[in-house]
Length: 570
Image (cartoon, rainbow, N blue to C red; front, top):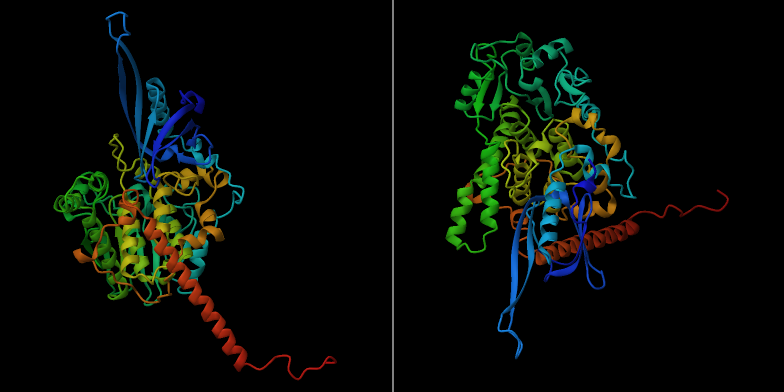
């Protein structure tokens, strides 16, 4: 397929664009390329507006018939003379929740432009997407891709315990297609046992180490549901794998992110839970977290409420509550706190799983680590957490982020699990403003790039697919771009101060707030917030510089001169 086949009209003169953040409409020349929509203002062309077409979630078009009446000339025919024309308006609803309006002076061109954008935004071939064509001059292709290998995480683990080992049982993705090639498993268990245990778990997602808590030696694991089925099937190897993790008399917790009823229904279709008789040292806790269609509908309802300017305060609050989005945030944080509490306060090992183990499971394990581990709250550590617990762990980004909140297509696979995670991280940052090294700007950037990106980091659904598509060899890493010094400083929290303690968030309803920086980003002016952020940054840097200067002066007054008493001959 050639991109040129999808572009019916490549250029439109005298197009008019309305976009959030601009003081008024911009008139100019509209150009459609294989991956971008570009508007260059007229007459000077001093303003260029770019939109990645992959960012378009929905295209709405409206054709307007225009006409005017010209009265007959004096002495002319009494017949009316009517001249008619037409124009069209295209509304582009973007995956990052931005809304653009284009006015095209010709109806046929309007329909062609809308059709072209719809076709280009729906290209589903991974290797035809923009990251495979994007070549920023400041970056090398291999840069950033090998920044967070499992081996590095394991080396850190080795300094704390010898109870775990790095296994390459999945080196050809044969044991589990959605796991990376290297995973951490109990040292007492061989690869044959792991391979057989994988056959007993949905999608082959056998229990692997997610986090080791150095304070007391407890461990957080994740997997998918066991395939017990209606006949209550057992697997000795799976029982052995989980049994070796616990010492004699020790207990562990299995946090199931489904309701007890949903888990029971899953058994009827081949899934299920770990039976008490086979796993006597493990106690199961059910904490239902929505995923799939219910979560997507909640996201859609919230965005619709935020986009409706006609709502009164009471009606707005009712729509916000009716969306249930903040309830999902509360439930996710509560479950993560439960996992963290079992590890930190109960001194118990924890296994987290739902059904497939690629959605709510990763949401809980990633949030629990942010709560417990101060290294995950640094900018570098947070990137490592995302790489380890979301990207390498097999969250299906291409399926879950195919559509955002405005698409007219209602697929079965879309669900904003990663957005829910980012919202929970924002709640942590709001409640603990000094404890996270990164700020809201990073979270917004991650949201934007998960749905439409110039970089390959969030492409595909797992490491196996990325390997087949040669993503790491053919695209640039998002981490390489945002770790450039000029970019990195934009994402730092100027108030950050290292906090070695566990941070326990409040999950009371009054403590969970709407993330206005995301959901109202294009609706309310953010100029003053940006000015405030820059002023805080300036003040913090000024205080830091003055502190360093005063410290230097004090040191120079108290320390002896290292050159004193030395002669040229020494």
